[in-house]
Length: 555
Image 1 (cartoon, rainbow, N blue to C red):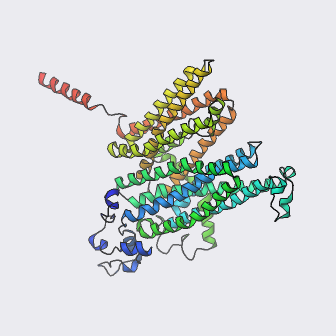
Image 2: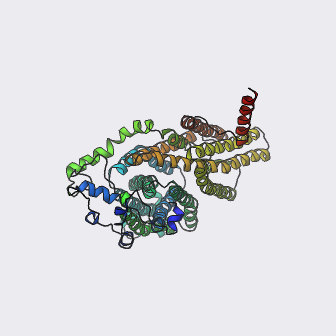
Image 3: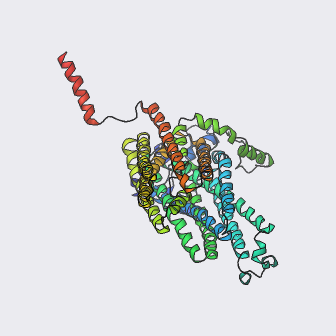
């Protein structure tokens, strides 16, 4: 059943149930009360020796309620999580820039710490997703993310206040009466900055945990074997991601331009206020979808699990082993998995400066472009990205995710090649007008290439969702996220090495090399799966068949 049919009230998505099982589905009571029927209310087995395990399996195999009631809650929950993450991520940059206006060192240390934490600890998050109860994992991510943002904003507020003129200092605590010029290098300021950096790392990990759990695991469980419904869910989740990516930084930047204290307060307030609805909606979705309430594949009846009431210190030691030791085993499993090539190709695309991020924006500013021009280019680029969320799902449904992926990567590679050709064609000319024309060509190529980037992201995610086993989704996707963060760090490292504006051409070549490598890697995957890369046009196929027919007649 398609998503549109479900949203039109066509009925629940049924997970291979018999009529006897389906008759015991109480969808209305689930949606109104937020609770599921107990296993005792399940149909009894004809055999008198029905075990508890059989009842649990029958309970989990109950049909899911109509997506018309669940998808709005999923979208709102995902929007709240993504919006707060994007808003705080960009807001923290603005807050640190206001606190330390004369140096980029604190901002660099903050971003570096977040990147290293995400690279090293993301595999542990994946193991947690695969091991523990889905609801508790997402709940924990919400609480950690919101508390980290709230306390971080309190730290930013203090840091910003104590560097203000003495007349504006808070008079509540004697510590804050210290003059701003003597406090700039005070050890307590460094301690607050260290705490804010630690909390920023916690927020990054919690956001990653929530994103991987919901996008790579919950979506698959919600749609089960309905490929069309999954495609539509992925499309709308991607649209939410891009919407928050575009408007979140814009909103906090506008508020910060008026008053930094107000921007800090808004970031803190929005994070705290949105925690309640997100927490409730996630619980309602979980309670209404039995497929989300899984058992560990290695657990048996009566075995102590992290969610059992008897979980004690031994369980805590087991949790530490799960979080610290098991991730070391996920890398070989990740490399050997059939979906490794599409996943790694996607991660390679993060080794780039050819996007409207800090590196390219700084180069454009050095090349003489105004903030208004850069902002307009970024808006146009976002429109191209949003168009990909409309075209990519249709392409995936028309030709399949494997072929759609090679089309999308080819589109990105070709347009980046066109942009770079235009850039290098004009770069040797001393005329500023001609040089600006080359930069405009580069910007145009980057903007159009974003359609291929997000199209491939959609196709690769579909392949991973379809091919990764339920109890490996978390570890596989988190390992992918870890490698993505590693390539992002490498992009920043190359920028630190080739930091002069005239060396930006070297960074563009490195970025294009990463995209070309990703294309070759994925081409090998397509060749392995399909035996060929591209279909011959129908007209050529007809000519070939006609030629063979003529040869047979002549013989």
